[in-house]
Image (cartoon, rainbow, N blue to C red):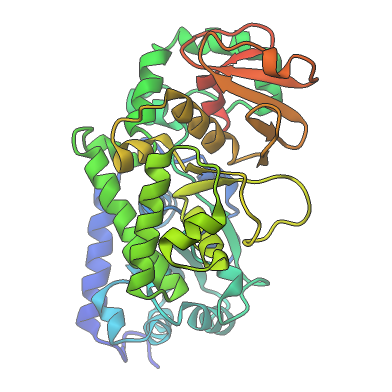
Length: 409
């Protein structure tokens, strides 16, 4: 095909390109997630997965705006665009490459039924094309109908840490603190940070409405928007990936609401499955779906090989903002503290159940989470045991401010 000719609708191509340019022009680059420095952008096939609302689309636009020329060699399209309901992605890309395309950015790939087969073919047939796509965290990239495991390099984008919230909300760029440094130097670190910001009010704001970047659109409607985001995950993302019937979507909603109002929940799997009128294995699969969608966290033991059929010891909502959005003002401040700690540490570390204490980190560090009057009584005879204490700016010894664990990424 000669350059400048199209098989697909040229007006549609132009529409999508113009929409892409408008998006890039509106994109702000004052703050960019640290993930941009962790990705090897020289790779030819990159996937960026993350929960809905965490900022994946903005992240792509920021990378393009900062690093690539805005011409017709680059395009961003979302695969939930109506164009792809009647046109194949593979034909669109053939035209794009034939007309000088070098960089293809795709969004919402889980909405496109044959995404894995067509992306495999595109990757194999266009060896000079760079493909970067984003998708819901529920997408099982390595279990699609085509084998992408030897081709695609996948990265996970998380929702905002407390550290990132401070940068975005207050404009204060504070360093990531690896856990070993935090445990050894927490007094000096907390002193340095608390000199720059009133940390306790900032922490309270984050717990209520700071996990997702759309808090910048206003806090008054934040919980409502987050509730809508959860509905989209349950009604659109999960069915698209797992081919679920609507009756099961309804049961997933019922399950999530139950978990939201129950706080950290020690599950009776048989009883809960009976209440939902599903089998035990189906319930465990549903819990795994909600976990991969970043709506809940499952606290399991470190015994034996883990699978989706391994019963969790406790179930938590994924983050404290979901507690506010799904269950109203949380009554159990202890639950809020534990949800925050689990959420922040799970990004870089293994978090496991322990019969003594609240959490076992990396199979060697024991943590109790509580308020300022919390004591070591429960873990006094255990080495490598720590208290994560809420409501304090500074700690002492093995007592560490809870908020400081929000600087792990």
